Image 1: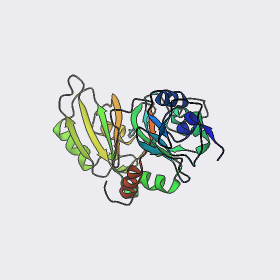
Image 2 (image 1 turned 90 degrees about the vertical axis):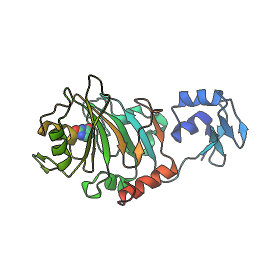
Image 3 (image 1 turned 120 degrees about the vertical axis):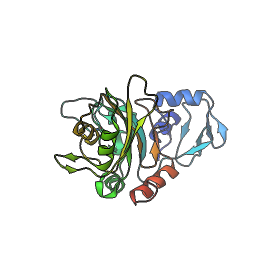
Image 4 (image 1 turned 180 degrees about the vertical axis):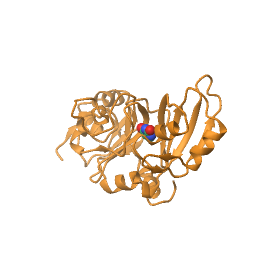
Length: 246
Ligand code: URA
């Protein structure tokens, strides 16, 4: 690899956009071979040890895995014939040659956790209903679900593409004027949560995914932001896809 500017190297490793990486460098948070570097122009290559906040970053030679907070109003497809913005448009240009794609779908109007990767095998296992990897959503409804509606959702409801598998459902306390329920499903059918709620007579006024297998959307990741997954997070995802640690 030919040496490249530190902020570009950081952007390719998925630390942050190039501009944000420049700020991180200027703040003295980056060490190259043990020495704090504040000049973004500094050139580095894979032979160099680059640390951000004490964590070594490396361009992995294999697959890439990112967690992204999808905002409402962005498509979760890789591209759109009508030119609308997709989750891939949120990535820094330096990541464009990685052939990343979204792991599963979130509706245009749904926000929350989405994984981006170029690991086809893991993607298949994470999204195929047979592997049953749990996904948890917060749904806002205009009126609070009744105990009977919660019971029906948990037991499985009949949709036009068949009965849904049992789900974990609970009404969240303290929702104020906006009732919220938390629902965890192992399948991933098209618009499944909205259709399940509709099947028991509930309208969905907002939907947000807070967890995918072992990953949760932590507070630090604002809508539109992303970061690379840590090695232990990738391992936990593999375990969940193998039916463990879900
Ligand atoms: N279920 C839905 O209805 N929509 C999503 O985006 C995800 C799950």
